[in-house]
Length: 85
Image 1 (cartoon, one colour):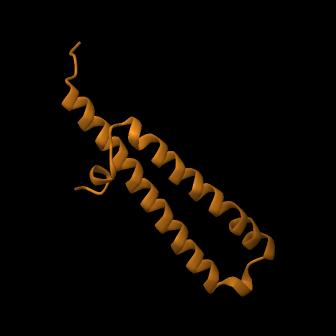
Image 2 (tube, rainbow, N blue to C red):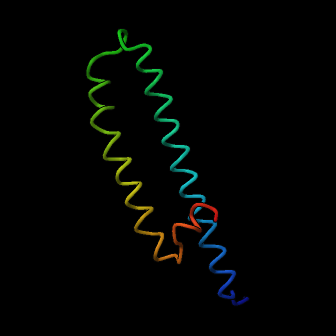
C-alpha cells in the first residue's frame, strides 16, 4: 500500500473535475442536437413529448452546473485550472 503525495492527489482531483466538465459539455451538446432533431420533426411528435422535454431539461442542466460549481472549490480547483490555464 502506497501513500499518495499532495501533488498526486491534486492531479487526480483535477482529472476527475475535467472529466466531469467534459461529460457535462458532451451531455449538453447531445441535448442540443436532440433538440434540433426534435424541432425538425416537430409536426410528427406528440405534444406531450415536447412538454416533457421542455420541463425536464432546464432543471437537469441547472443541477449539473451547480454540482460542478460546488465540487470545484473543495477539490482545490479555481477557474484557471478548470479552463486549462
